[in-house]
Length: 491
Ligand SMILES: Nc1nc2c(ncn2[C@@H]2O[C@H](COP(=O)(O)OP(=O)(O)OP(=O)(O)O)[C@@H](O)[C@H]2O)c(=O)[nH]1
Image 1: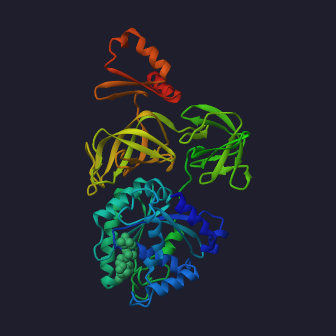
Image 2 (image 1 turned 135 degrees about the vertical axis):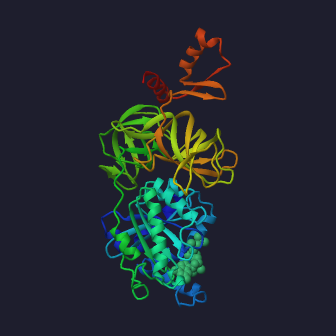
């Protein structure tokens, strides 16, 4: 991902002058649709009609698509071809960002390959989206896929939808078709608790109701064009957690300098702020904030920084540096929503690698219920099939650190990786810490005591446990996890 994003970010200033001169935050979008609904054509059309396409790109496009289109227009989907090359290089996270702007606002659209729509962007691009554009083909209307995408988008915290009823030229611009599909969609949105819904009939191919009005062919439609709807959308409110810095790298260029690098995943920080390093629990103050070319007096979510602390502490990749007065939750077990992404689904009790930010740890996953997309009900389930949306319990060997996804889309999101195949098997969002006994876990009938090693030795030596050694297993954990255990018992 980093490579793709860095490459795209490097292009940024050339894309559209409006983007760099505006000071308001751009609106972030994701597009969802089934294969062939016209997603590539729509994004291409948006880039083309807002003039985000550079001249040399435009010339190539006209040349390459000259024979393919009887409207005498380029094949807009080709604009996104560059992405294919990035994907073929096996870049881990298949999200690329496209930038465009209207007269009133700038936009960033997360572009992901069709069938893997939600695979990884859940933990990356889409998790920052303000709005989702759901595409449907006017000829087919809502499909199960549309329901799934809408559900996932709402679980991901997106509260504004635009339903793009595309290919309207193929249904004779029939108003009744639009009324039916938009009615169905509004009903679906209501069941998801999404109130801001705009449905728009359009032809991405012909550019009707995308950037320019389609009034000539759809005089009965008096709503906004897609871009007008996007201009009216609101930015997602700021995240509510304190400062979060998942440490990606410890930088030690010389004896005298030690900095902790990463992208701020929540809140803000300034020199002098008190921070705590998790999971170790060490405390320090921020001495300096450095970005690639300057020393800064503050940093906020999204900034890539190097943090220098005022004392020697032990920090490694995967740790999180957070504000002292607003900490994430640390615990051995959490509740989460999961979307299963591989044919094997999620089987009860299976163990995976869980990756969240720069952290990777072992986890056991137990499904609890599955969402029935038609009724919107959660039915009890012990396993999740591919594409199912479920509620699960996560049980860790060592303390995990999360914010609820509602509060922080970055430190509350994760992916699960199959340790045998290295495939991403699920994307998930943490809903809450489980009220468990901190470090006490039951596994295969055995009790696992997770304690710092020396404490574990002492406890195992006690008369009570010495006689039951084969029933109790101890695992060495960090001090923070042990503290959790004690909190759990006290509470
Ligand atoms: N008539 C008509 N055809 C369209 C419209 N939008 C897209 N198409 C055509 O539908 C086909 C699929 O469009 P794409 O943009 O490639 O669809 P996609 O959803 O991106 O498909 P994948 O890239 O496979 O996920 C192409 O042949 C497009 O030219 C439209 O508004 N009207």
